[in-house]
Amino acid sequence: MAYNPPTSTFHIFFLFSLLLFYSLMKTYGRPETLANHHHHHHIIEVKSLFRATTCSEFPTRGIYTDSFSIDYRLRARNKGSMLPMFDKDGPCSPLSTGDKTEKARNYTHVLIQDQARVQSIHSRISKEGISVEPEAVRLPANSGKVFGTGNYYVTVGIGTPKRDLPLVFDTGSDLTWIQCQPCLGGCYPQTDPKFEPLNSSSYSNITCNSTECIQLESGTGNAPRCRASTCVYSITYGDNSYSQGFFAHETLAISPSDVFPNFQFGCGQSNGGLFKGTAGLLGLGQDKISFVSQTSQKYKKLFSYCISPSSSGFLAFGDSSSVTQFTPLLKDKRGPSFYFLNLEGISVGGQELAISPSTFSLSGTIIDSGTVVTRLAPSAYAALRDAFQQAMKSYPRASEFSLLDTCYDLSGNDTVTVPTIVLHFQGGTDLDVNQYGILLGPRQSQLCLAFIGNSNARDVAIIGNLQQKTVEVVYDVAGGKLGFGPGGCN
Ligand SMILES: *[C@@H]1O[C@H](CO)[C@@H](O)[C@H](O)[C@H]1NC(C)=O
Ligand SMILES: *[C@@H]1O[C@H](CO)[C@@H](O)[C@H](O)[C@H]1NC(C)=O
Ligand SMILES: *[C@@H]1O[C@H](CO)[C@@H](O)[C@H](O)[C@H]1NC(C)=O
Ligand SMILES: *[C@@H]1O[C@H](CO)[C@@H](O)[C@H](O)[C@H]1NC(C)=O
Ligand SMILES: *[C@@H]1O[C@H](CO)[C@@H](O)[C@H](O)[C@H]1NC(C)=O
Image (cartoon, rainbow, N blue to C red; front, side, top):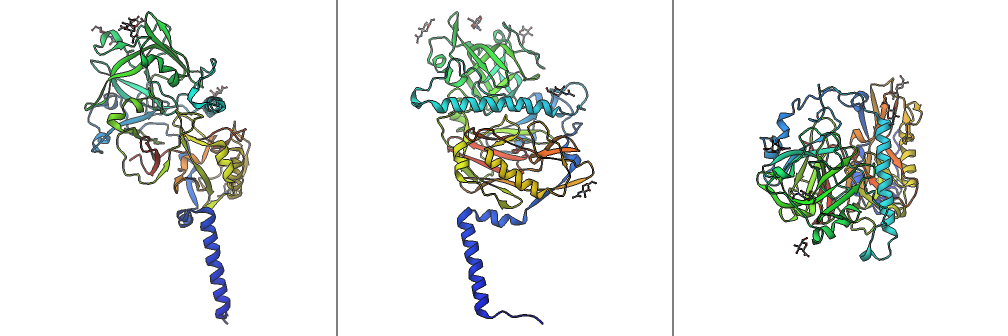
């Protein structure tokens, strides 16, 4: 026999539910999170977490070395310019030599390099944070190390006549530089012939006494030097990569219609590190000398990228695409070149974690194209790890791997059901972490939660590129905002 509750009880129950719902909304202030509750998990084919061992999409180099050739990506947008972007170690990279099969990636090595970059970002941001007078920020003389260098590159045109050269792009640094003949102090091997300034009619050295030379220090972390009245720059990255050479003007071309004469760049005479076959670096930080600042008249400091796990992604300038949800980009005197965001919460499997707001505000958060694995404040990471372990408790655990401490043996499973992980930013903007940004590991029997906790609560949190994959990340620097567009690589 069905039991019909007396109306009064029903009313009380209804009122109570309403109150509970209202208090939840008030606590979290994110109705869209509640609406997304049906999206609790991803079902991942375990084998798909291992990189493609062959490149199927772009088998030959020719298509993409000329960045101006007919390209569906360039035509896909009617304003701005879009460059195909490659993982320099990936199978689709035109820099990969020989056949298009690749060896398994050495994740131990990847995580060691990644930690070196993170440590240099942490030390740079905390050093600058100590400065009492932001107006008079002077880097300590030994703070040559700036940041690491990142893994992805695009091809841009340099000089007159134009040479198309592949450059690693990096939102964590500012100076753009290219390996230059005669490589006075030595160059690393690159795939294309090295740039010869004497062959370019638009090249000119910048003199030591110019304002441009004097301003160089804020973008490189090192005071410029002078050689025969030519301004000499020097930059060292957190992973011990470096470049030194002449600071110069040159014509830089992104597309036939987007040409930038007198672009300030480094003509690198002594270069080394992890640039693997590329010709140099494209600096996308916020300093005056960055590419973003120098092209601001044309592109209004607007750029976006999408990192694809399996094929080429893109780097686009001057087009805001269709992304409509934005979170504020914050100014932070601790690191004016970096892109700071307000991370406010994390949900696992549709449930928001109980993390105190002061945890996020104490560390602060940046988004970075070059860091691989996202770093969180210690207590934010602990909450994420605990909820993740809870959701994964039916899978057998495996030993920790390098800096990743929550690992599973999935060798007996064709698919794995992992909880969704959503990062909530100020303004109701969410980053719903893609399936390649949740588990990382060297083998099927050792796949780990792909997040790392900082050791110090004051160290900045960093949104890494693994968690940005498959999403179009839009930097509207002039508008002071950043957005995420799901499914953005297509
Ligand atoms: C992977 O990298 C680590 C650290 O650089 C190194 O010690 C190890 O020998 C490498 N393993 C392989 C198989 O190359
Ligand atoms: C520079 O120009 C010379 C003469 O035209 C040519 O032989 C040489 O290959 C060029 N070098 C580079 C690096 O472009
Ligand atoms: C800089 O030095 C050059 C010669 O070395 C000189 O011709 C020029 O006038 C100087 N410019 C300034 C702004 O002092
Ligand atoms: C740029 O300056 C350096 C150092 O003074 C000099 O060796 C080089 O020839 C100059 N390059 C050009 C194209 O003037
Ligand atoms: C994963 O594989 C293990 C070993 O075969 C099995 O015991 C376990 O039930 C599987 N887990 C799930 C959730 O399928």
